[in-house]
Length: 579
Image (cartoon, rainbow, N blue to C red; front, side, top):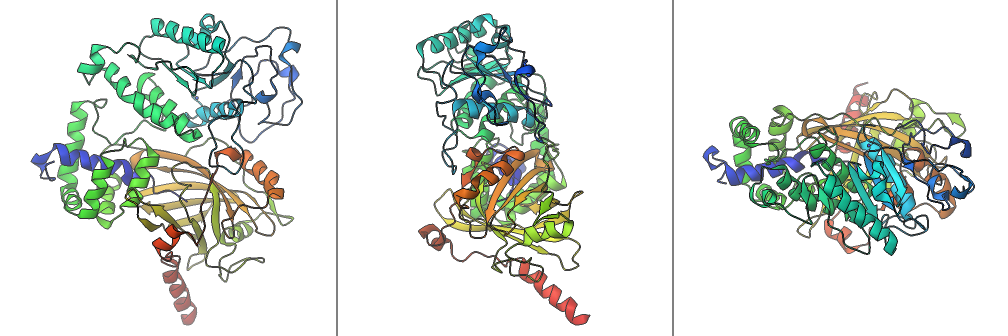
């Protein structure tokens, strides 16, 4: 599924804020390195990778096979063989894992994937990569089996962010507790730490907000940094507790953007009226909304469907893409689209901008069916099984090109019944992409959502540029065909996108099959290799429900698969008749 993005998403929440605060306006009252840095390269044979990785690791005298397992197949390396264990290098984010057994203890990630959950070590190792990707290489992450003298390790003690994960051993817990206390005593308002999935509760610290000793500033003065940290705590905890890699890293980016003094492009924009923005900026934005788009706002507030959306969005923090996006697709309407276009796309009242993420570096498929990939054969893979005159050999000639069997983006790729329809435009120079997917709305209904993307060939065969006016806001995406079976029994896509006028960026990947079921297990190794080559671990996938006999599917009615294509087919027929 592809995104409608937090376009209307965060925006609409602003409408709600306007409706409740500015009645005078008549709105109704209302952390890449080029390699893995282990400081002992003589022990590891280095292989070039298409995806750069940066993760620093401290050895503690235990087996460290897990340190390299996800990068390449190697024999276990014993830390006892190292004469001089490397010191922990400085990094902005430190992940503290159990001192022993981190490579065997299962984590809470990947509960909806087609594979077993990853170990704590495997999961955190990948989080370290994503810290770099989401920060455009600005931030680095260390993965550290917790030392008993953690308070004596400056790079841990003084790290901007420390996340203790899955600690249960009493000595590990004491080391973490002592570390957290020492960090509190040294905190200058720019540090953060959390203990997650540990057998002992430890109070978090978010910037100047210390949950173990809440200051009067945090409670009484909402414009202070302490109050900002207190508000950020539940947001970060909510994101952490979903146990998805995207949500987890976004939580870290949100903190870093607010308290480090260094903006993170991924999360630097907000369309909310917040204390962090300050009263002057809030007033300017609200005034601009009311004076430039007052009619659109009023029309939305006076419409039952649009107003329902606003009411639901008031319950959601607009930086939470998952909940916000689901709310938006639950209550789509023309009025909502008109409002989004006016506020965001036409006037860009919040001054947002966003570029398509450049990391991880992804390479497209180079050969298919024994031949070098060309722009034509790349298009053939997109069209695939659609009953179309341009369909390739081996096509099933069905109503769709592909169905999504599993997706990697937590906000946009886990909707049920995901249909992909690719076909050429009337003039044949470009293509269209129509995703049609089912939404289980926040109020219990099942409805179909659809999008209409313009598709242009990318600079290299196997790459494409997608664009769509989605709920009033333009989203641009860069797609790669990562791999495809010669018989078209499966295909792997990777995409990176941005909705500039709302400052939204995203990454994702799709495993597609003709009928939406997972490929046979004897093909999984090849598929997982393709996913890893574009920075996606199999445990990050969400298996999609494509059962056409389910009650929810039947309740939604027939999917509008030809909603956009029928007009293109008619135009093609008319053009052919004239020729």
